[in-house]
Amino acid sequence: MKVMPKQIVIDPVTRIEGHGRITIQLGDDGVVQDAHFHVTQLRGFEKFCEGRPFEEMPSLMARICGICPVSHLIAAAKACDALLAVRIPPTAIQLRRIINMAQIVQSHALSFFHLSSPDLLLGMDFDPVQRNIFGVLQRYPDLARDGIRLRRFGQQIIEWLGGKRIHPSWVVPGGVNEPLTEQRRNQILATIPEALEIIVRTLDWFRTAMGIFQEEIATFANFPTLYMGLVNEDGEPDYYDGRLRVVDSAGNVINDGIEAAEYHDYIGEYVEPHSFLKSPFYIPLGYPEGIYRVGPLARLNVADRLNEPKAYEEWSAFRELGRRAVQSSFYYHYARLIEILFCIERLRTRLSRPDILNKHVRAYAEPNSFEGVGMSEAPRGMLLHHYKIDEQGLVTWANLIIATGHNNLAMNRGVLQAAKHFVKGNKIEEPMLNRVEAVIRCYDPCLSCSTHAIGKMPLHVQLVSADGGILDEIKRG
Image (cartoon, rainbow, N blue to C red; front, side, top):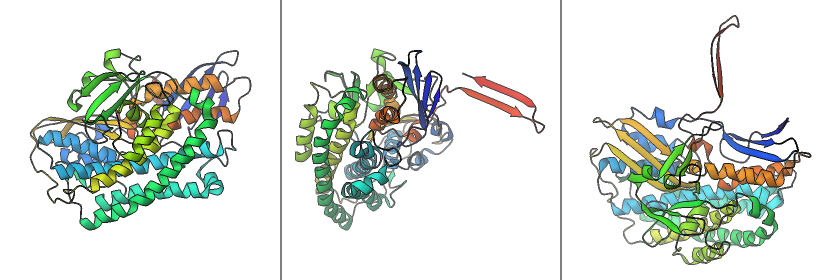
């Protein structure tokens, strides 16, 4: 952190995946006037996948992220399925669903236990030197170990299905490349009881802990927005497929059936000058009024029900926190735990299906379309991969709208709300700024996942000769 005249800079934002900073602008009276979340890295996958064979997209796109590679693997494979224009074997779809839910469990566990629990267990005002996972391990070893075991549960399933825990290549265009064996199915089922015990006792603790965070609940991005997520025919969250539903802050459904191929009629992409991260918005309401949120909070807000017994009870309690939709982004933490519970219960349900061991798990075809869109739910929210190919099957164009990007407008408005409430310019204290950072941690942003198109960050480049003379210079911003 460094303090400049009329400006506070938090650099870097800690306990998130990727590189970002927050700037807070103060008036002469020390009152916060504005605040921004700056994403300062660029990955560029949209460009360097051009010219590659479309069959490579799932494995290539999995390399976007080491935390949630399965999410990109699935969205990319679904886009390639659309290029093939064939019917995917039903068992392959079920297996894709299973590995995606395992991904959600392990990623949510990492976010909650490793990145956010230091604030929740030790306190927002705790010594920052010890306010980390090591401090949690020292003071709450049982809960810290629960987090490690729960993440291992999800990663182990990914490894058993995909061959390795990071960047598996098991999901391919047309399905998956290997069926599930009875031995593997039984191995996974045997690990479920312990995982259920862990998440149930974690939820029991968190419900009681929420009472001491009422000020944070009231000010951590607590404002009306739209919410967006995939639901199935029963109105449940659907992490793999389904229709895209949009609800407003009162819980009213304003769009209930957006197909992947028509996303560009409803989701616009705007670039702000302060960030490499795009700012998507809901086109019918315009920019920036079309602000919306995705991810665990949004998925539980757009859902009609959860058809698993323990998860249904928790979801019902969650929905009672808001009149129609739960607004505070602090509750992303609660929603994340509920989704872990739901995914573990649903894993057991899907693995018990009689056809889950069917050996027909892949359809083979040549490209039958020049354009394909894949849409699924990543841990952090709805994920879109859109590819165009030529007659040789080479990618000519790609567009990626990542979950973290969907939340960009809400994150920026959230840090402003928290900064106005907590930061007093005449006396800057670390716990004030930690709370502003903690707003970002609620969303569990994955910045490596989300920066693939050039934004408008200020730029100053000089070409300098060997003797120190400036040969050329470019300035922007």
